Image 1 (cartoon, rainbow, N blue to C red):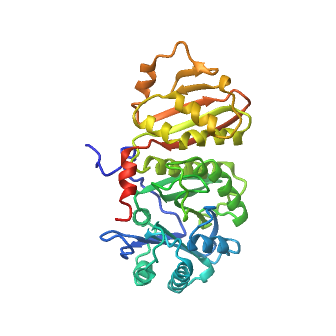
Image 2 (image 1 turned 90 degrees about the vertical axis):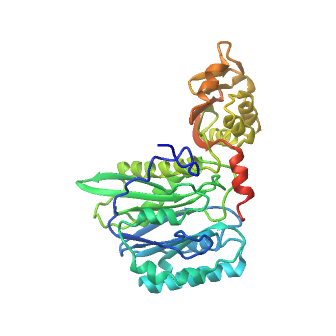
Image 3 (image 1 turned 180 degrees about the horizontal axis):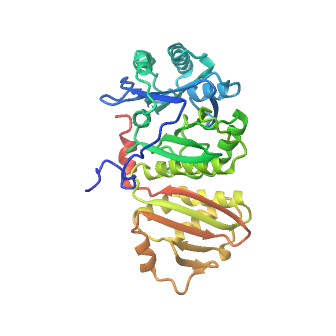
Length: 408
């Protein structure tokens, strides 16, 4: 059966069958914030005992919701918590109106959910610069509260979509001293994707028991290796938010557990990859590995320069193994490089070696690899032991079509 042409060709076959997480319930509803005929607001309600962690965009023009969440996380308690998200309008660059909308939503949600207002976190995603019609959201809070259900996460994942072509979910199950611990996450993201934290909206829930400080440290460490290693178009959103809630309902303490952190990393990486695979207009998923840099930071700089290059990305879209564009991207990155030490591979095909074309290189071999939906590109800088891996997609005419009409 062929896939719906409106859905990214890189999309998973189906949304995963996410297990319920003890201590959290979900609901979604159609509020008509911008989109008609679909759910566009979701609510997650976590029980008392929940700890929260998060990372956010460092954009200088971040939205009122992001600023509010950042302030609240600094003094969050374990009294329970709620996350409310709307799509269609980002409530960014809306001045005092934006703060007033956040205040109205958090205050009303706190009353409906019987929580302190300081325990209500909101996110908004969509068009920038238009006042958020928050009255439409407030009118649906009773309906949201009444329909909360432990199995409602798939509908929640759909409600937070904007230009996404598919909902994104991932999960892991970890055995902790005989207790089964669930880690379940959903995300949205398709365009305006470049690392300055998470470059998307992401919500992860676990029934593990973990202090806020330990949870925050895990989330920050693993964000740097997942969400901060993806790019679709080099543009950083005003609204990027990653929130992780640990309800503690399983009773299993995961502080200091490397197996739990490894599973959390896998969920975060899976969601990050799905965002790239849903990149606006994307037809290729590209893993870029850089080795031999002076240090890991330089390797990351080189990798992101390659991943963000419009010339590299359009060559990949055209299935052209144009290694000269890779050389260009390394040279402009600003990190240390030596032209005569570079080696480049497309997949397992050595294209260039020590600053020159490999004498055994056959372009047809590399061209065949470029036709695949998943492409590996490796560059050895030849200067040290620094390494980095990042993920991106190609740049096609579809990206222009989507963004030329985004506000229409």
